[in-house]
Amino acid sequence: MSTNKDSWVPPEGEDSVSEKLLKKTRESPLVPIGLGGCLVVAAYRIYRLKARGSTKMSIHLIHTRVAAQACAVGAIMLGAMYTMYRDYIKRTAQDVGEK
Image (cartoon, one colour):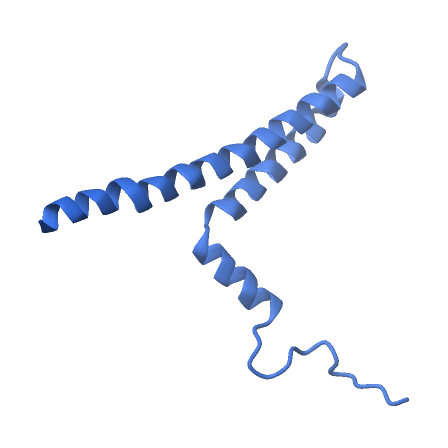
């Protein structure tokens, strides 16, 4: 059985992983923003772990998870609201202006 050292290279005509990621980021920029916010909140809350005071560890971790999920859900909601605005309100206003 022969080994191909370049087996990780995508076939001709297909995009690499980084190109696919950049393409998806351009299509929906709020996904990486939500993911980044989620990671920032989680990192900050874990950093503040020593200063939690008398709060139990499980409660602190639950609050960390909820705050991180709130960032992700908030980004999803902003994306949905922007899409609705772009598809319905803006398009309807353009259709009325054309008539």
